[in-house]
Image (cartoon, rainbow, N blue to C red; front, top):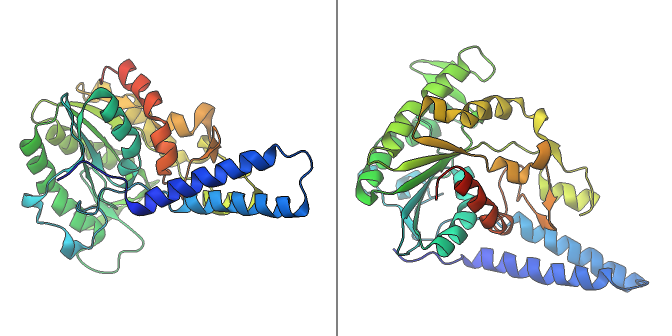
Length: 321
């Protein structure tokens, strides 16, 4: 493995974002824009939005992440993806795409703190120990079954091999029905929250098996619209694309448990990263001039990277540095 280098599509997206942002800034200073300048400004705004659509963080090509099932190595041979090699602590980020989209921020922290930073992320594979049931399941084994079978072996294998000092884990575990034996426990039913909380036991025990300190990333709400599409329709300055966190009841309920997870699992600390994208309960499409989302739920790499210093403050307050 080699130290992570930003994939070409992401570098191109970042370059497009920077160039378009500069053009918007220059044009914004013009005292009386002509029709040509107005057209150029609109094109620059559109370029910013289009770049955000493709600004999704992913591991280097040599790391399995979103590959087809047959392209994944056997779970017993799964290795974590090296994102930065340092002289300090060994840190591991585990989960699905909602863990992966924080990797730019953690990579930035790793460089500042001299961590050796690894990720073990698999798209559509929550770190929680349950079989997810999805509407798109059309064959057996299902995506959830494949994930569960892989996770059962891959997680303990990686923990044993790398012996991390710190493990951060997160995902989008709150949005799926749960299969228990031969029946499905549906979200909103009386038993769903019990089964979801129960699924933490194995994950916490496994990730902490070698003595690592653990940090649980809080769950991120789903925006009410695809953010680039919404901004393309209403413009960069609109408030129409923001989402109130209270509108996502499922995420609120599950985050209540995470915020108090230390009372159930003393070695785990909550890492409230959702507060960064949802300050004061409002999940924002743009923060400090940056587009936050590439779709309805995944962060842009550029915005994630910008939050490294804020996450350091959170980790320090939770004694996870």
